Amino acid sequence: MANTKELSRTRKAALFVVAIAIFTDMLIYGLVVPILPGYASSLGVSQTAIGFLFSSYAITLFIATPIFGLLSDRIGRRGPMLWGLLGLAAATILFSIANSYILLIVARALQGVAAAVTWTAGLALLADLYPPEERGKAMGIALSGQAAGTLLGPTVGGWFYELGGYQAPFLFAAGLALFDGVLRLILLRDIPSSKSENYLSPFKVMRDRRLLIIAGVVIIGASVPSVLEPTLPIHLQKHFNITPGYIGLLFAVPTLSYGLLAPVIGTFSIRIGHIKTIIIGLIMVSISLPLTILPDTIWIQALAMGLLGISMALVLTPSLPELANVSEQSGVNAYGLTFAIYNTAYSIGMMIGPMISSTLTDVFGLKLAYIAVGCIIIFYLPFMRTLIRENKKKDLSVKV
Image (tube, rainbow, N blue to C red; front, side, top):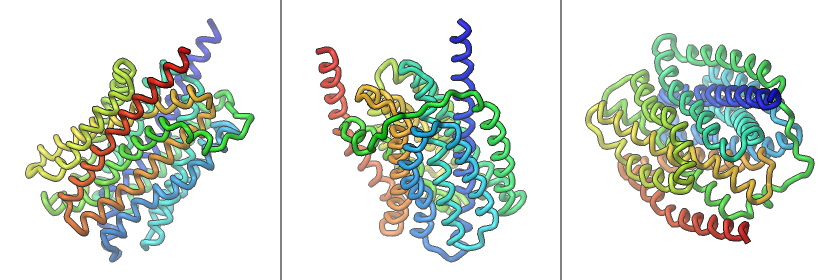
């Protein structure tokens, strides 16, 4: 009985720390959304260059994720989570002093490395501690931290910028990172160390076709908000003549709807199946993304962005537990590596989203760019049918 209570306390502490860690990372990530496009533009760079600036986060996230995924399996989760915080603090300081496009690139890239460490080790820690039947709910709660951070980031960034200038948002972020560091040191002190004795190649894990299809879903889910970030703030400023503070509030709407519904969707997806939930989400995203460019009033704009947030939650929330389940069914329990794959897929989405949207916007305009992305998402649905067939084959082989 005592062991059961202790395990419950350990799980709750880990879930709280991971949710706060993800919240902090995403808040500082989103902090620059209403500021960076205009600030970078004032330095004389093009819309395509601004798209690359946003993508630099994802590029380093992509490079660093497999490295730290393997490392967290070998040495445990606690150390990497502390390293991630140090990287995030350094990135925040660089942002505060950046007076050139190159320094902005370096700061954003370092932010991506820090996220690779924190996300991979944190999600692997939850998979270590929670059984399959509880992972959907636990990871839904953790992703609420992501949504809350993304929700508050643009809002906090926009209003602190208006109140105190360019450096004010980053001073706030530095204080938040300090608070997060204290939590990680205290609450992770008694977390059991989970290490993998054997080296596992990422290529061995990626042989499972189901895992590759889920990785594609994550790429789509991650690309959707990153499509908006370098392009929509400029459109909103011109179309509605609003300030960065109000742009931040509009960007808060999809993340608010995402955060409120992520735990509910995590439970819902267990009942109807993760794959069916993802399919519903993909259809909704393909419709709601182009809708964000059509409204002529602020209130309808907010409504369209709220619908997009719900759609993203339906895509991403079931992807995490489904990825862990596929990994487990394949006999691979190195969750650091498994969630490194999730992070790698997420980083690819974040990397290609700004590049595609910025380039298409430069060539064809914003409306056609968003419609094209929506069509690409629809074209992915046949892969989900393949995933359903693969799962049925796996179930039959297990029964036999």
